[in-house]
Length: 280
Image (tube, rainbow, N blue to C red; front, side, top):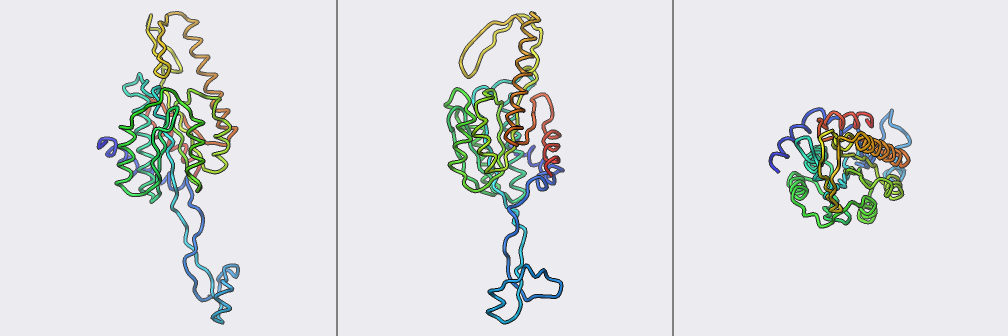
């Protein structure tokens, strides 16, 4: 946990902090106080109740209301144990989630989390402060997963029930169950500002030619030997991935959700910053 904190804190003190601040706006302008009207003040800001009570024109003053609520919806299902590039998808999701949480903390925002598989594994209500963020990161790294599959729709429906106030929602998953969550995602995107982060590994897109290998599905327990020397096998994998990616992009586009693909083989920070810059 300490290693993750040190790395993500260094990242969020750099350019990412500015990108985060500009990408997510506050809730608007909050009333601060009233003062006597001065030449040049906007007459639309006159507080007529105070003006009538005092006999002198007064105007309302406002401050930008910056505090946001950030919710991390994090997939912790068994399929995230996959990884071929020196780290697993679970390692990647932990680091990206910690980076987002640290960015929110440094911006003065409250952060909460929902860890899910095919059930809700843990809900952490939004709060602020370093101790809360460290608690959230620790729970992310250690939360036991009791579910065996992935149910993004259930996590989104749970968010609607527990988070009534508008929030910035980061949805992190490998999205292997694409096509099952469009409707709840559409509902959530109308109530909240949703950003989807698709976690992947290069070997999901292209199967290498390495002879006979045994594949194991962490979510179903199914095992199968595959001959990767067969061109048709590698082509089928490539075509499946292309169809899967196209369907996922179509779901996000239909729901008006910004998204980025983050892979275990590459630095996630440039893609994350590019996504935030596009929103800024």
